[in-house]
Length: 211
Image (tube, rainbow, N blue to C red; front, side, top):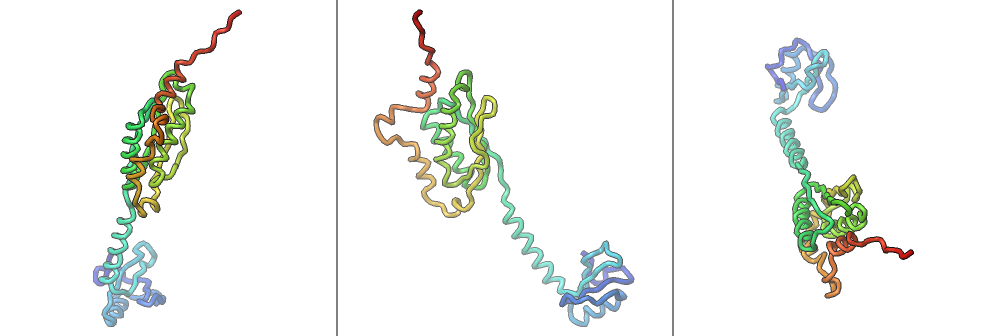
């Protein structure tokens, strides 16, 4: 940004320090006016005809601009897309471990793509896969929002999670939720897993009929 004696244009359009328009002036006269007020003449619109210059405190202007730039960079948090892969027969412990990893990613501002891969005849039992996705989301819902709800795409079920910034700032309780969300409440519940449900569904055969 050109200022003071670096401005080579013969005539310029001048804006005073209070924002008032001074019209087109000889550059020397504008510079003299700025110096008389212990200020600078700064070119703010070099491509205008004639160029537009403003009388200001250039040092103060650069300082404030630097503060604004830092604030913008601070608010521009870079995020990554992390992918978590699940299966229809995933055990509770593995599900909690993967959900814990997703919880960390989401807490630090990253997005998560959760993919559940269905193999062979598992595609006929997609509802079980959707249930796995629901269980997964329950563990991380304190720090996430479903940008894309679980949806069947070919042999996969895909869900996209984005950070819930408000919840993440409040903090507290998230890691405990990861540890306890899938703990069975009774011994009966402990003996039944998602994997068992899938395996039993796969081995079912049509009942034979006697003619």
